Image 1 (spheres, rainbow, N blue to C red):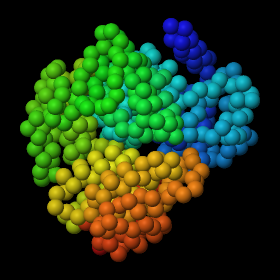
Image 2: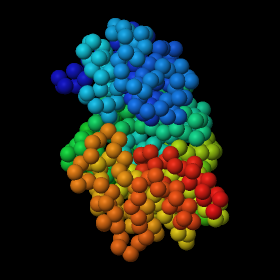
Image 3: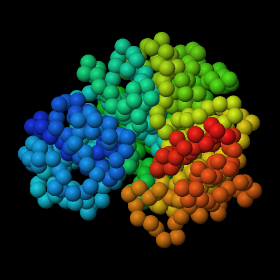
Image 4: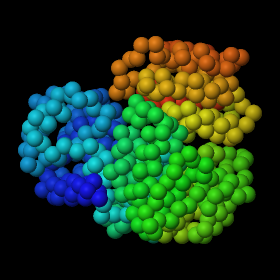
Length: 473
């Protein structure tokens, strides 16, 4: 009780402090989750400044929208409007190191400093949060649910973990709707700051063991998250997950899966570049649902998104139309080239189970064609913890091109490299280990049929060049 009262008091303090703020400064402004908050505060007419390590399309878009963003960790570059500690909120991402000079400046100056998840949780207290958590699938499912509601009479606000192709943004604003769609991130236990009205949990395959230490601690974190769902709300959990859930009184519990559960699909038809199925639901069944992005994993994602939309009040006709018009999310089964001769797509998959699902989905859609992948491992710790699982998933391919590890926030770990994955790949398969700079020449010589670029690092920057090479081959 005392811990709950302390948490509520903390939330009220944050909420009250936001009322007197006229400036917000973001450390890590270009992160996909952070940038959605940047756009929120810009929409409220507040002064917004920030830092990010490197420029990218997203940070340049934010600058064009009015945010004062720079790329050098230098306190002297902080805008004057963001130096008033009484009226400036500082927001940072857990990926920022403790030694960051600007973060140190704000801490020593006694500023109001909050993690991104704390601010997001506070901002959504007055709305009904429709949240999607899980090791993988959450960005597509969240974006799909937001699109379903945006296209319905219900409407929604949304803070998303990817750039939707329908809207070209990761943030949606609808001041008339009581609902907000949120991607609930388990990294650093961020999702514990949320109080969902309804939540999907897509998967609980162990990840972020640099934070959690053990799979048991990871699963316990999801268990705690389920206790935060508001009375009168709902939990929609993928059937067969290891975790236990503990719901408050009055919270409905549903299960979903492709072929079974309270919400599931029947009469699935895959062929000719289309996927159509009938949606079975305890609320209202919907016949002839067609996926706008026809990959088989989106059957599961679509079932979860439709369940959330139904709970929020969207109608069958609205859902059917919006499912067909959903155009996808950048880097999630993102087709750069799709012809009879060559297919090039990228997918953000960076966990072994995500990669397995991605490969199986592509194989199902492009049955009979040779499928190869470029994979850039993400983080030394994840590679260390799961190199055997990565190799097992990648061995489902016809050919694998491995590049060096993308370090992100980490320093190298002795003995940990992409070689660990390479050495555990299926012995009889085609495979190579290269520097990412060699990738264009490898693809030029390879004449690939279906090529997937996998990972959460910067190898995606090569997509335009690879597309041009494959178009000319």
